[in-house]
Length: 216
Image 1 (cartoon, rainbow, N blue to C red):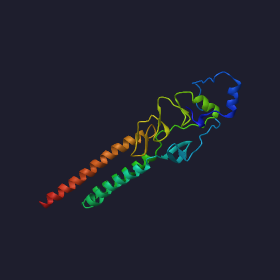
Image 2: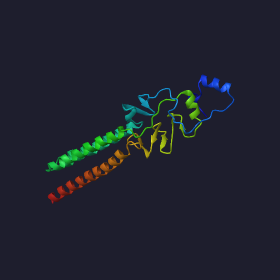
Image 3: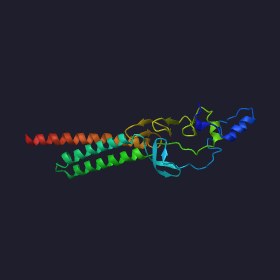
Image 4: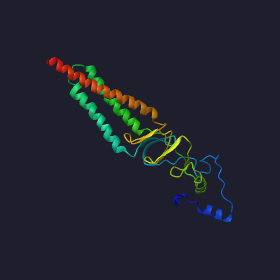
């Protein structure tokens, strides 16, 4: 059923009363035809996302709904890197080990922030008129929440409340979806995180074994 926001305007109701024929919807028409505006209205909130930066009518920087979980994960990575730096690398005689630990920790934290803020591929569209929206609402691929016609590559995420192009999955650790816009950054972060943990564990075990060896 259509919500009250999907009901036609008074002008369309009058046209429907005067004509007994049904409205014919042309699927081939562009979803942006007959829009009241030809530009994307820049909103502070897009779905459940808070938009921090708009570039070329696209939300380039957004904060996802699970930003609290992301903050805890970010602090956890920072704590792990800090503990390894101050209690392991800083006690060794190798300056290379100290700077490597510090560099990897900073890189991991900045990459995590970049991934969490980068637009995941949110599909935007100008707001349609009441008449056009009423026509599009009859199509099964129309998203009434985002006011767009979806194809096979577009999926609406209920957690983010936005349509995402080529959605991979919804990641609670960054607080948003993984899609076309941030999939490369996601794979880079996963690889970087694996290297970060392998380095931290390896350095800790090496320094521990070395101290035990010299004690003997």
